[in-house]
Amino acid sequence: MPTLLRTRRAPYQPPVLTPLEQLRAGRLTRRVPQLLFGLVLYGWSMAMQVEAVLGLDPWDVLHQGIARQVPLTFGQVVIVVGAVLLLLWIPLKQWPGLGTVLNVIVIGLAADAGLAVMSEPDSLVARFALLISGVVLNGLAGALYIGTHLGPGPRDGLWLGVVRKTGLSVRVIRTGVEVTVLAAGFLLGGTVGLGTVVYALAIGPIVQFFLPLVSVRLRSRTPSES
Image (cartoon, helix red, strand yellow):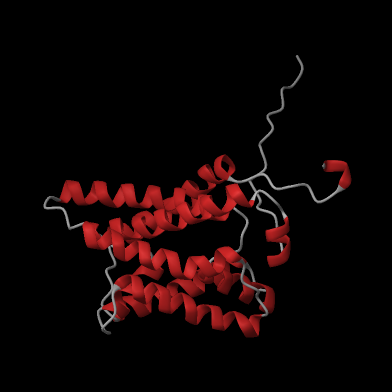
């Protein structure tokens, strides 16, 4: 009897492009609208998780904690933190793409818009449903945004730059950054709870599921592939 071998599909790997290559890769009439929709959805899903009041992802714990200490809205803090992180890219020799710049602005505005029209549900069941919906939509939004290949967000770009600069593993650097951010946000009054755990466990698989479905196929960069 012949042995049947099962082959596994390799995990999706987004292309690594310079900011100029990102713009020259074509299909901008598809990619830019998808980018904007993904960023708006990302901010809206953040607002859903805030209103669920069951715990946030590490960066949003920090954003909420800062917002409770200064006269700024949650979305305004998201914008300010994103801008500060871009400044930290300079010594890391990281270059922002169009998506990076829009990420700083659009997500914060969308989060504030969502918080303006949403309110905390009365029942625990409704809050849990809002949390789960927010996490799933956040994963979809992240895939939509990443799938345009127009540059990483300021937060992801930070740990990517540190990895390139230090040569340490992604796991060590990203874990270190997010644990530090989570601790700082918690000390400032950000909400840590069940939602924090749910997000940490679910967001990776959700993004991995959606990314191959929404990633934009770019123009080939070699004559043989065009």
